[in-house]
Image 1 (cartoon, one colour):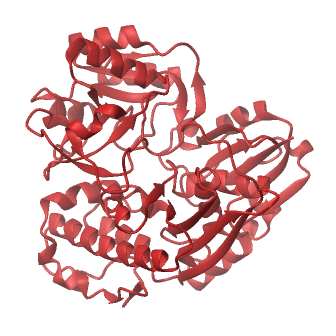
Image 2 (cartoon, helix red, strand yellow; image 1 turned 90 degrees about the vertical axis):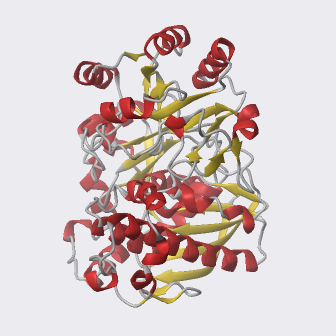
Image 3 (cartoon, helix red, strand yellow; image 1 turned 30 degrees about the horizontal axis):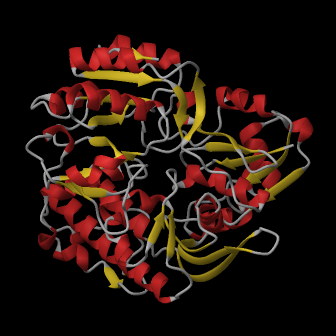
Length: 494
């Protein structure tokens, strides 16, 4: 009998299936099936995919429905009466699919689900777990001490918390909305804009913070930032100010977490953990760092299932979604790269998380002076935005100055200064940093491609970005890949 973990009803719905041996059989996002970006609800094609993992006898929900509705009422958002009960919330998502086998219904605290998704997939027996997001039921920041007991069951002790409305995630989302971007979606663009702004100009934004140690704000930022705090700032200065304030507050949380002296291993989860610019500072506080590649709410589908399973989960990689069968097409990809400099790949199982890691990627030669503009034009993105490098792990220190605590970055979780930005203009930002993905000698398809590329060109890296255009989910199946190829004129190889 398998365990189904569900995260749904707010944004970026996702499902995870774990078997009784702790193997992850599936983890995927609803948006990849419905084709609706950040789809909050389950859809029929996702449910159809899940049915191949029957029998499922336990469903685990990523938050406490009653407490969530109570917080929404407190925040003036009203109550969704059909989501007050656990069974109601579950039935609202999956209907009667797998229903005949379900015997157990479990729900867990929102932040605890985040914590479990990180800790129970980590390589650690003991860790300090930090969760920072916009909001759970009431918690916005939590610090946990996590370990395993004599039976191998995961244990969690909450060491500290901050509650709504004081939230680093809500602050950053409010700043995202202030520059005309979509909150809870385009925060990563705001992070990229920050390099072009001047944080010292944003003195008015600094006054929003009432107490940086306790992470308290002067106003509830759930509905946005009052323009009086933004003065006449440019969008770039707002972005720089928001990034600077967020980093100061995250550092304050990390200092507090370290000072509990629970463990020098850090597990960091929640949507704010996707801020790879801020992540470069984490090594100042902890010796070892694990950020699960889907640390946001979608990843909590895995966290809820992990809590129901109770023990350590067998984590191997992030390729956990829909499968496009067949061998990774190294030879065909190489031919296209050498000829056209840009190629798409849709092969194997889709990545779990917001970042393409080589199975649903648009790949390119990082060396050409026009490559960044060509790829941005294909993806219909702002021209200022850079792309990530994917590099053979043993070569990373020759090309990037990796921050303390990050000897590798296998899931694009941190930025690093590029040592040779003039050679690789397509993968460096305005400040000469890159969001690095390192690939170990693991036999993966992207590893084989990089080895072939290095042998042919002497360059151990490629440009890697997700196979989608702005505002659309990543390519999931071969039909999606064919559509991308037809509409945007890029060869996509499976």
